[in-house]
Image (cartoon, rainbow, N blue to C red; front, side, top):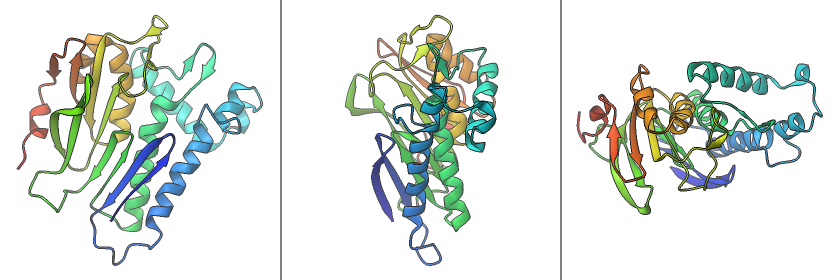
Length: 252
């Protein structure tokens, strides 16, 4: 069972390979309803979102939703862990998009698991949470391709992931949108950086600050237990972490 819908300004694909017997008939609606909630709650572009209310000074900190308080806590934690290279505040405006996307995919995966699904993947704009192994092929997991940042129609590397998350940071899809909080200047030293972690939340929250670090970002990912990375610089040269090799094989 597989569906793709446009939400949060991007295609979100949910592929469930479990037998449909025993799963709720409205399982896809449940997942997409959750993403719709996240969009209306956290989008900095919707006037009625909680983020916009915060930026407009229309809501007191004590009145923030529980999810908003959790995102702020996680964002502060990530800022500390990245030595300030992750910051949800830019020019006085609050934008938690750099942490919300991976967090939302991870929460959606938890919803799927609670319904009884065990083998699935969720792909939201290229960031992926995979559970179990794709039963349609003999590979070691779900097949994930990394796009060439200089040619979006070309795949430069293929990974196989099971019970893991994948997140990629770069400017080639959405244009310049990542800033170096240390200099307040656009982060454009490298072309893309892909991170594989135990879940998409962990991968996503470190991919963005690692990209902002430029060439030093891949060494930062190398230093984090449980994470692996694949960086492409502006000349097209790729550098990967020492443990990434285990995700490159088609069979266990």
